[in-house]
Length: 367
Image 1 (cartoon, helix red, strand yellow):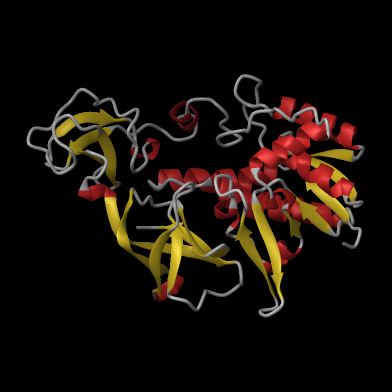
Image 2 (image 1 turned 135 degrees about the vertical axis):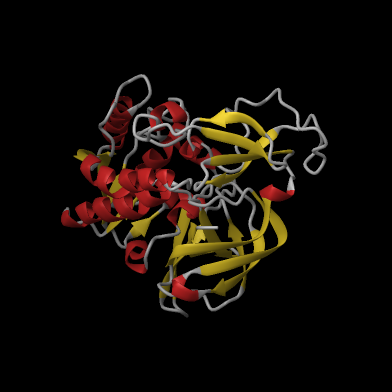
């Protein structure tokens, strides 16, 4: 491989650390960049930014590369967090990690990397990019480790972004990444993987959201129309939610469709017009199952919608690929029809399409 100047996004985690180490071992000129994307309420109790930078700097020192600290907090607030709040206020459940990849990591960060004279940028994502000489296009493929695959979060990447991106650990199992980190004596070899959204950290989600969205209490009703409680505001709930409803001890007499009197409650619908939260008993209640969805704001990795009609899709991360049929609708919207019902299809989440290992793109679920 031709030796290149590659800018690596060092997060402080083991995946990006091994990414930088692999590229340096191959003889590339590697430069590390640590991105700070959140400043509001950035404290040690919930947000690990300070420790993450210390870990990233320690990794850079061991590998023998430079590291730069860049603040993208203003871009993040304008391009990601503002949209995050708009979606929640509209009653939907957005995925900020997808928007962060499209707007920050592979736009603001990528632009910065290119200004530094980079040939490519690399991250620790579990995905792969390949060139298809038959189509003359770059393809986004799943990571080899199926349990860690992150192509779902990268489905909005364009041909230009894919052409400049590298995901070295996408070809490895997570266990191999850990082994390589130990072999290289990287200081974060045994660091736990981060979870959750960076600006929320480990804090209670509703507590965080309540700082930005006012409470708007309303009735909680069952599928039989009986009010059994009061919610704090529809923005604080998501379809399929089971915890935090405050109705655990209440039974609905005669409610057999979802598992009977003793079955747990799940959020099934949110009516923004009447400010009503609808709940049902039982994981497999009909209100929680869908065979068709509509999505908008489509983005395709090949720049155009796929010609195929039969494909596979995920309607949420960590879901198995489900067979479906793709149908174009008016106004650049699309429909997916599933032979097998899908559970808790949630507006605001992304429907991401696949053809085998290849990620085709997707869009935001509207209904």
